Length: 173
Image (tube, rainbow, N blue to C red):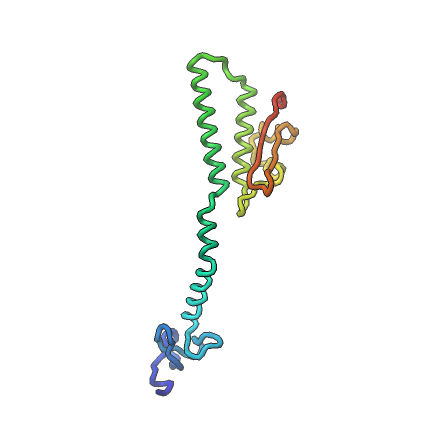
């Protein structure tokens, strides 16, 4: 069988085919031949390389996909805590308990604002910022004031996967 007997290349119709791929059986020109191969086209070689990579990375990708995302878990926790706070505030108002002082409400709102900014600033690995400094322009004026004054305590956990943010008693002034 000569080169011309194979017909035109499947990818380059103006070129005569030089071989037939052993995998897809398409007629291919010399340009379509996989490097270092005699009878395998580039497309099939790339397919096999991706397949091998997927087999190597399969367990890693599955483990990564099943790992809980810190940002999602923290966001759910914040939402639950805010709902509990709203419920307790509503019960207190209905029962006729003492109103929550405005300063305490502002401080709680500042803490929630900072927690939301920290969650939004997580990097691709889920790490929180090392300090609040890069977040100051994203915060409400009250939260930024408390953070700049050092009255808000922000402590990233080991490996910066989690964090604590607090306003010690008497520090809101």
